[in-house]
Length: 275
Image (cartoon, rainbow, N blue to C red; front, top):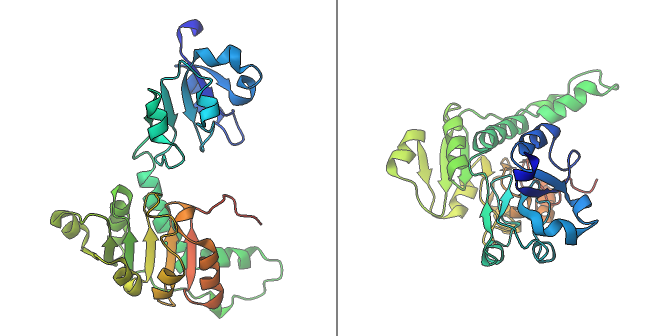
């Protein structure tokens, strides 16, 4: 019975919100109301909302919204990262915070290797040439760089970083990693990874630097002018963590000046970038 289901607040259905298939699943367990409809009469709807089901950081769990939800029990984030949530404040209200750890670990590791390979073999440039009506020949500049036998530097050797190391082992890559905590000897030996206590050492040696860190005050702007200047001019930066981990202005300058060879980005800030 619909009246027996708890009520959940969502951003919207479609566009930037939940896709129809996901909404159908949610409706099996919740009565749902979209933020737009909720805001038409928050006094009527607020007392019955027990859950906020967040997708793509919306509905934003701001104090003004939370204060209108006296029955709220949980803010559930559809994703791993919760850097957009003020967890101490939310929990101080007696509300639990939930996320979906591990849900995209495999996909993100696959994406990291895909971006690395696409950059090395100039897949995007090749596609542009292939679809350009003016193309009459293939330029020699399309030759890329070798992946097999190159050095991979992983910054952030957590669950996803380790899966990237497992995949890169298949390309006979030399694997370096930097992490807050060194992994076990067994983990290192399993993928043939060497620990760099100093991140600068990794940046100087790696042909491909992959960022797989959580966004925090410590990692915001982790890669900026100084770090980019330490990288090889033939190196590629791959970011599958958060856009704010990289100083994008510094990255643009490094690319324009040839300080590094390339960047392959799964994330930016904002998304999408201004054209």
